[in-house]
Amino acid sequence: MDRAFPKGFLWGAAGSAHQTEGNNVASDIWALEHRPGSPMSERSGDACDSYHRWREDLDIVRSLGLTSCRFGIEWARVEPVEGHISHAALAHYRRVIEGCLERGLTPVVTLHHFSSPLWFQQEGGWLADAAVARFRRYVRAVLPILDGVRWVCTINEPNLVAMMAGLTKDDRQTGGVAGALPPPDQATADALTAAHRAAREELTGFLSGWTIANQNFEALDGAHDERDAWAWPREDRFIEAAKDDDFVGVQAYTRVLVGREGALPVPEAARRTLTGWEFYPAALGNAVRYTAARAPGVPILVTENGIATADDAARVEYTRGALAGLHAAMAEGADVRGYLHWSLLDNYEWGSYTPTFGLVSVDRVTFARTVKPSARWLGEIARTGILG
Ligand code: BGC
Image (cartoon, rainbow, N blue to C red; front, side):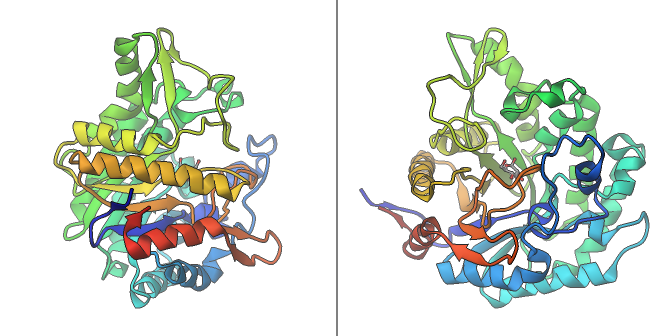
C-alpha cells in the first residue's frame, strides 16, 4: 500500500550541538564528562567535528533529498562566561543558517539541548533566581542571526531535564529508560516552563515551541489511574504547557509499561535496541495521537525519532514502522508538519559512542562520513513523499 504524505511536509535529520560539534569546553556536560568519577563512561571529545565540518553535513542532507535539518545553537559557545557574548560564535551559527538556506534546506534551530554554560550551572542552574532572565538574555543575543529561520525549538526535552534534576546520587547508578525515572524536580520543571515562555515572548515572528520526550506510557493490567498519575508530572504537564505554542515537538523512540507500582522494566522477551529500550516502532504514531489529544489544534513537528542499532536494516525496519504509524495518525486528523529523524550522524550519545542512531556513520579518528543505506531509503521517501 502506498501512503502519501502532504506536499511541503518537512523531511529531515536532526542533531544537537554538544553531540556533534566537539570540544564544547565551556559547557556543564563537558565538565561532568571530565569530573573524577564521572558517570559518563566516554567523553565527547571531538564528537563529529561538525563545528568545522557542518558544510559536509549539510551537503549530505541535501544530496539525500531531505528538505530540512535540525541543529543546535550552543549557549556555552555564545556566552562562555556570564555576560560575554561571543560575536564569533554567533557569526559561526549565522553561517550554518545561511548554509541551510543556500542549499534549500529548512533550518530547525534548537536553542537549548541539555547542555548549559558551566557558569550557569555553577550559579544555581535552573533553580537560580536569575535563571529565566539569563536564558532570556541568551535568546535575545541569538535573535539577530535568525533571519530566514521559521522553526525554533526553545528547550529540548524539558521533561527529561527536570527528571534528571530530580535524581539522587543512588538513582544515577540505575540507567535505563527515561520514563522509568523518579518524578521530575517540580521547581526545575516550573523554571523550565517559565524560561520557555520568556523565550517565546522574544521569538515573535517565528514558529516557536519546545520538544518533549514522549514515553508512550501504557497501562498494564488495568492500571489506568496509576498510568495517568505517572504520566502527568513526567510528560502531560509539559504537553499542556504547549497548548498556546506555534508547534509542539514530538520525540518518540519506545514505550514504557506502567503497572500498579509504577513503571516496569522492559520485559525479558522484548526485542531491544542498543540503548536497551524496547524495539517499538508504534511509539511514534501513538505519541503523535497522544500529543494531539492533549494539545488540540497545536501543529506537531516530529523533531526526533530513530533507533540505536548497529544493524542498518533494523533501522529501516523500525523507521518504516514508525512512518506507517505516523501516516495513520495523520489520516485520523493529527496536524503533523514534518518528520526529522534522529540522528543524521552517529554522534555522542551522552556518555558513549556505542549506541549508534545515525543515518551516516562517522570515523572516530578521521571524521570521514559514510552514508548508510537507511539514509538513502529515507531520502527516497522524502523525494517521492510516498511510503511504499
Ligand atoms: C535526545 C537526544 C538523544 C536521543 C537518543 C533524546 O532524548 O534529545 O539528544 O541522543 O534522545 O537517546
